[in-house]
Image 1 (cartoon, rainbow, N blue to C red):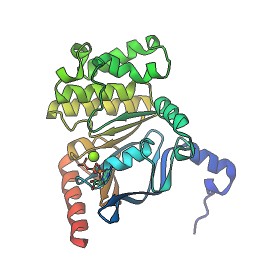
Image 2: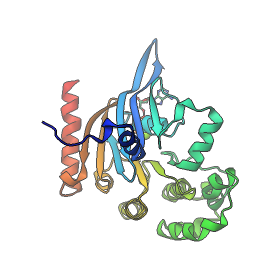
Image 3: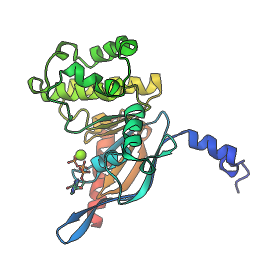
Length: 270
Ligand SMILES: Nc1ncnc2c1ncn2[C@@H]1O[C@H](COP(=O)(O)OP(=O)(O)OP(=O)(O)O)[C@@H](O)[C@H]1O
Ligand SMILES: [Mg+2]
């Protein structure tokens, strides 16, 4: 018997709960045409990420991780279902409103970086602020601290094609963070980094989450990266196969074995 007072039983409580939610997907589905039929890259995904959470999204290649991130970022429209970011149903907006919302409230780091080739690293990083007509000066000092932590200070004047994959990846992360986004959506931000640089990036993200309360959803294949998050969501064939707090795991190898078990168990069901 529940004798507690349910916060959601009144509209004030419901509003308070809603204010704690950064991202909410409801029955989110994305289908693509394949041959004569349709193929669901994502099926009925219900996922809630609270403000200040740090969530890792794991799953095999093709399981729908990037599709989910792109839908949350409003970069592609769902076949059905909805996405709310900071209380806003983003697909109810027109394209222009959505672009402005994304620029101001979301930081997106793409799996393939998407740097603009004719801009230097620094111009790429500052692009979202300038595109929004904002002055870069007030935040430049803070950004320099971040750029130092990401070890890209020496590369700021270089063009993307003269940067290594790992350097491009860190520039893309700096760009994702430059507009001080409420929610950072990062697709494999350590995918091209060696162990030390990858762990360094995790340390930076952890600090942003712990000290600034920044909400982070990060896609990764690597348990050693996912273990930095507070929660791990595992996708399998476009569905959520598991949603686990990382506090359950003593270390990255404990998470790795559980992850393999989930993936294997699910494969056995196919
Ligand atoms: N634009 C598209 N048109 C058709 N199919 C697509 C499209 N984008 C993704 N898919 C398919 O949807 C599925 C999920 O793709 P997605 O890129 O989300 O996977 P992922 O989990 O990010 O994989 P990876 O770890 O390799 O990056 C894949 O089977 C992919 O081929
Ligand atoms: Mg992907």
